[in-house]
Image (cartoon, rainbow, N blue to C red):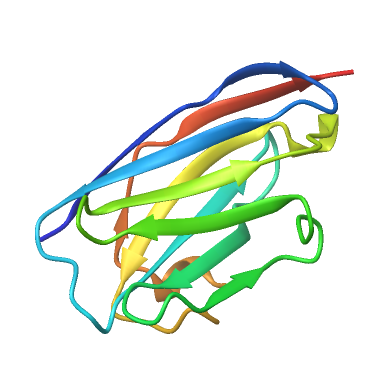
Amino acid sequence: QVQLVESGGGLVQAGGSLRLSCAASGRISRNYAMGWFRQAPGKEREFVAAISWSSGNTNYADSVKGRFTISRDNAKNTLYLQMNSLKPEDTAAYFCAAGPTYYSSTYTTQYAYWGQGTQVTVSS
């Protein structure tokens, strides 16, 4: 069993930056991927970025490429999302996810474990 707790959300002006963290407890196996998804009010949860826990290979949604960076610290069992050049359309609840899947996985059903989410609000 894996528990995930996100932190680092908040209110920021357009063009600003935020860094999200996701602390994982329980065993993160080498065959796991971890990812970030987001959900805006009235919209479906969408893929943002993912990383292979073992290799560090990454995958990004087109909407965040070049602005967001996903990384992990295996020793601390922590996942990060560095978000730069934030836009109002990035406003959403951001969720951390983990599971025995590939870093190329972009569907919510491919991840077994989820955090409770952290709110990111970008003002114009």
